[in-house]
Amino acid sequence: MRMTKIYEGAYQWIMLGRDEHKPEKIIDTNQYMVRTANRCLLIDPGGIELFAPMLAAVLHHAPVEEITDLFASHQDPDIISSLGLWDQALPNAKLHASALWEGFLRHFGCETIEYVPIPDHGGVINLGSTELQIVPAHYLHASANFHIYDPHAKILMSGDVGAALEAPGMPVFVENFDMHVEKMRYFHQRWMPSNQAKRAWIDRVRKLDIDILAPQHGRMFKGDDVKRFLDWFEALQVGIAV
Amino acid sequence: MQVNQTKSQFVAVASIAAELSAVMEVAKEISLAAANAKAIAFRAGEKAKGFQPITDFINELAKDTIELVNNINEYAFHLYRLTVNEQRMTEACRRFEKVGQLAVGARYADSLNAPLQQVRQRNQVCHREFIIQVSELLIKLADVMHPARAARVIAANSRIEASQAGEYLQSLQAVAESVDNAAQIINDKVHKCRSALTIINVAE
Ligand SMILES: [Fe+2]
Ligand SMILES: [Fe+2]
Image (cartoon, rainbow over all chains, first blue to last red; front, side, top):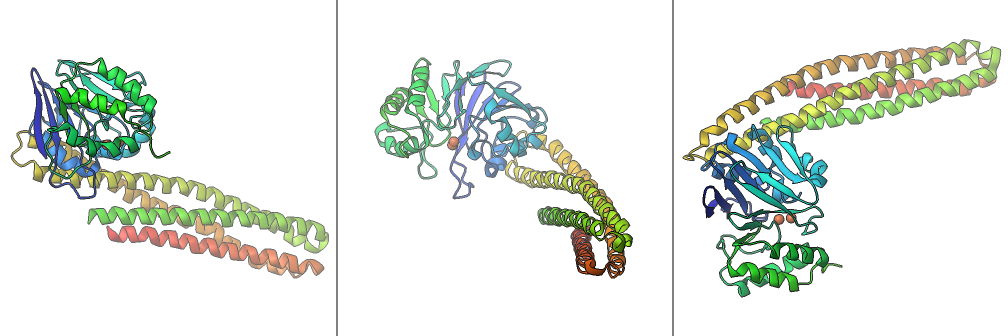
């Protein structure tokens, strides 16, 4: 599992991904970790197949007892089917996920971990020394869907929004936006169901100060590419299957 | 090895559940046959006097069987929950060991030792509980055999009583026949349950 530090301040953001042991037919995912002095948040910790490499990577930065928070942007298996294993590994952890998905996510096994239901309007994740915002992103693509915004690090973890499907081992940041567009188009057109939801999200996100837009698949966007992405997404017609 | 073990537990528990629901169906059939026999015996009046208490008895047996099976179903469900838990913990042990291999040299690799030990322990406790529940279930299953056996004896008596029922002979004989069949099916199904459970015990 490759680890890339994307923010370093009083705490750190680390992107984990590009795992070379990943079984071939499983979609490649990016996981994110926010590490403070004594706590650790895992954002979209990933599928069951990724659990071992993911935890092994995290153990370079934090002991299990300091992994105190998990966040699931939505209920997809590539996001959180590893829940049942985290549940047995982490002695004191909370899972922050939509209230709407609780009955579904518990199918993965959630006995030890405390399920903290997020209401539709969002909320915060308090990590003691810092606080992150939970931003609604409903219907993008799941009917209850959230992103994480860190106003301090200026990072927006945007779940499946901004995702791209490409060959394994690609770089972690977009280098040429125009060339990247084709790797995103079909994914957004097909997986994102609602133009209305898309517009609401764009209006909301344009008000945020963002240095890095960090999706769950593909490459991250930084600097001007963030605005380029928002413009491109705004103009895109989604929900093409009907 | 452990993974295969929970797999065979799943299969055993599922087949027990299937056999039990079949037993339930048959017990309901018996109670229907009893009601039917009662109606015939009533119409036959004097001629089927000896048959009337038998129908009540058949009905009682069917009720006993249904109650026992309900009770056993709870055991089977509990066994299923235990198997799910065990399977989850076995899987967790396997994945944690994999983390251990991948995390060699990681600063906090040792922090996983405690959770791994705990899962192993819980897994053992769960498996022991499973074994205990299986042996209790075997005893309960033996209990179901009793009414089924009694039903066969009663069926034989019914045939004798039926022979004195004149024109009702045939319908009463049919009742005796169906009770006998049903009892035999229950016997069969319960045997299947027992051997499914024994396979797990042998796998131990
Ligand atoms: Fe998704
Ligand atoms: Fe995804």
